[in-house]
Image (cartoon, rainbow, N blue to C red):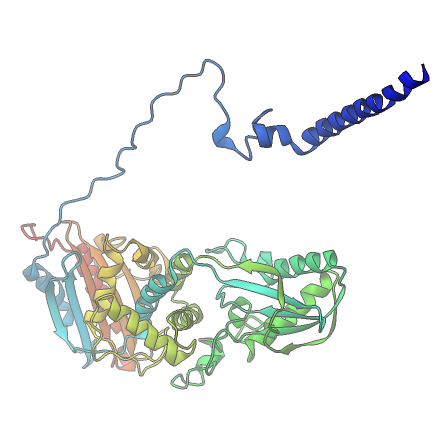
Length: 481
């Protein structure tokens, strides 16, 4: 009897172990959804795998069909040079535009020249931003985002705020509320950093800031010193609110230091003890990224830059182009890379000269053909990655830097002209596209760069009226005038 009990003990013990194993497996399967994940048992989570959710019993869905075209492509309408001349020539009479100007009109689709008058090369002012924008979209891609990161070095207990060249980085979420495009902010970055440090058991740090993505001088040597009062800030890979001073007027002298100071304050508010003042230093090799915020896309940045003629954003984009093409993220490197990129896209730039990406330098020189060439590129169906240059152009009488213009001239032009403005002292210009009522589509450039101060406003109005004449004329071949 005792022998029989001895033989049964291992059997009973094995059976109990098997029962316990089955119970453990059941609990694990329930707790971690192993049955569903491994064998497809159980319900599908519609939030995680919506494509696997079956329709209700008895539901019959219609067979899907291709969506109809929103609008059919219109037939090309040739531009009549005679009609363009009739519209433009009367507005070139007199001395309002001064002794040096350029006017060029091309068929937007074919590039055929239909009207030309004046000089072969002009000071482009902010129409330069067309080239910078095309180069940025081509080299960086329209969906690229710039990351502002925080890196942690445990050995030195040092945290480094690293600028990634986000031109629209702001202080707080409220600073960017309601603005296009959406802004990344340093307050959110500080909160994410504090959470990451807390998870690592870190509560006390020293702080540095790193703006070394770009190189060279922060202020272009060809710009007048007065520009730093209210036109543009020093250019940096790290700033907040485009380096605007807290007073709301003018700019800070050291944008990166300003960003570092604000970030230190935001970290303290998030519960991190920051020892001393932030210092300017590159992130140590091997420092670990603990938090990041990302900018709007390059395409969105381009649209905003063109719409409001944002000088700082244009300069940041130009420097990114310089870095992306293997050159220098400096004024000279960025400008050279912009011209090289435009040339590689097939637009002749012989004789052109750029010293910045915004057009603030009066030493810049571009031909009207170059400006028209980049406009045609942005409109081309073969270059969809450049489309946001066209969609970013201000609309006459409605948006951006043209919102309060075009109040003189034919009302039919309102909404039919999209153009980039170009304004410096003594310089007034527009470069854009006009879609007239007859279906003719034109790329045009109108720039006067030696305007007498006595007729400065009159010259700007005259430039607008030339563009408006194109938007209102019936310049299509065979159209009644």
